[in-house]
Image 1: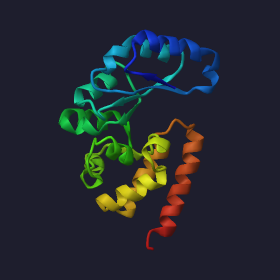
Image 2 (image 1 turned 45 degrees about the vertical axis):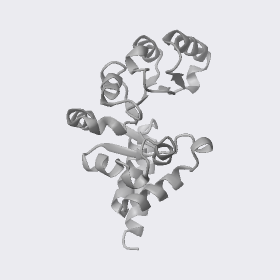
Image 3 (image 1 turned 90 degrees about the vertical axis):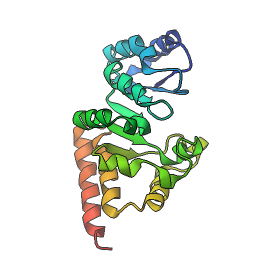
Length: 203
């Protein structure tokens, strides 16, 4: 479930209230839509209420907005995962803090290109983020709108940045390790990734 940041916090509270009869089917709450001019701090109270209801807090931050938006998402909304986060690289101290907290980033290459967050995939910061120690995952965002399921995002970013097999392996492992799955499910899927990687390492 997500709150639309171009709307008011009052509207977000209405969404929260409407969700409560269905909370057994909802794991997390996010914050999306137009980022600039709608900082995470605008939704401080509704996120506090959401966490009290048992929802895991997530948020789009640093896609269009600058690094300050990511700081707010971390320190005010107390998010457990950053959606996008490209502009975190503007602030070396922020990068260090994200690494220290082991906060994963859901990076969406084809969406970034479509929205002109990066004009060309060859200029995408994904590899820089990885080299900085950030826990990056590759995602499709909204494939019906931006085009390209997860596999296509992997294919095009690999070609654009010359990612190695080890890079792809790390990205795949991150996607399970920092998912919202149970620990048992994570361990099973991570073992499958390890097995596949070892079998195909020399090809």
